[in-house]
Image 1 (cartoon, rainbow, N blue to C red):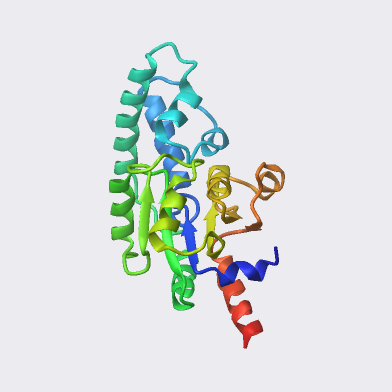
Image 2: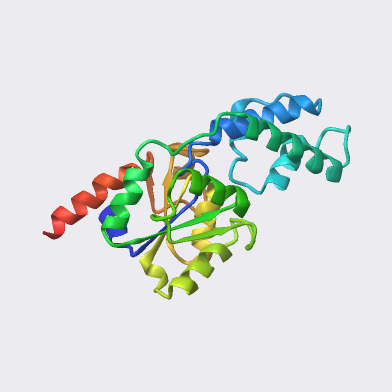
Length: 231
């Protein structure tokens, strides 16, 4: 698909962590701090980075289930508590550079902006409030009310709520689960390499995104170029 076709979409659905919110480093550090507190293996940054964007419980078990110190239930319960303490004590991250400008440009062009995230709603909404994005974002769907991505339920619910054809939506995310969720919901997708996935990964993953950009900020020039072409 021509890259300019994406800029004519009437609704842009964004993932949060690693796509708009510059939290991957803070999340990995909190994983490492929690692991240290529970005497679990000290895993490399890149290993932990790959699970950012998955539901927390499955991420914890995929990384640390080989430990015989805890039962799976104990592991997830204790790890989540230690993780939240470490994350809350750290400096709070902000938006990835250029993200707010991109959101404002999209909104000014007349498109809706929505969030579909595997983060719990209370935490997600708190970050949106702190960053003063409520006037920009129209709808927020999260794991608190819908099955986690890669299931397409969050996106399908947005399509039904907004009552527009699926072809008018596009999903933007930094993780294969975002691309799979878009595919499941029958909409186009854009991968960004600002979070957990690289360009090489997006080129070879299945399904692959319809377009890959360095970051959400790259949308600004595409929207402006599209507007110039239509003048």
